Image (tube, rainbow, N blue to C red; front, side):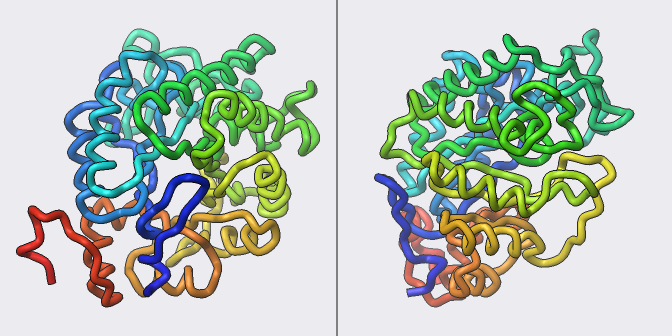
Length: 354
């Protein structure tokens, strides 16, 4: 059997293959509610044969949204539609996961197709928060540095969101600590200029992430997987780097995190990224080899042979796909054909099977 289509079990959850649909924002919600768009978008990728689908960055509080149109899980009323979506995903033999997120200083901005400018309060925007009062760029809102009460609220918001995620039927939580959002803003010295217990040293900068993990673990069953997405490097001088990521991954493994979803960038507007096929794979590979934690790799992975080779070489444990699976929701079914794997198709589609 190919590695890509070999099942993997993490805690009590078995994934039928190693293909993961990456969290990809759809900016299609009103007041945080999932819609028919989310059902069809995520549902079609479950029909397409993925092993795990992680819903887009799902805000743990209204002020944690990137845009006013972000998906949310900050109130109980959000659960009903999310439950419908997770039920459909599960019916297709796919595992439903959710990425819990807080945008921090990258919040209160317009959707990408409207230019990502600041959304003023008069148009539904809000005061943003961060580790320090340093904006992401000149076109982004200036945040307020979180005080002690604000930090406690963030921890509580993540914890309550995890409780709702369980009620909604999700089987995996991924904590979003990447791409320049709030938890990443605390990790990086480029955005964290604090002088208290949450700033300065490596141990202080990772403190909020560890507290969020501990809070979630008080409500999330110990037999269900808990992932964390990190940016392995800021791609900017003086920023968060791969050495710190390896150090963090080792700590997260000890703290009970099951898999590190290894991405990069997003923290500094002046980042200089060297992009190419599987360009982030060396980060996932190093973290896996030096810490022993399971890793997922993402970034310009576009074909079955590429994905299979990554797994055979032991550079990652799961293949997390974004743009390619936006282009083709049925990539897993095509990949199985390419790799000569006879996987089950939805019975409604069997007459089209190769």
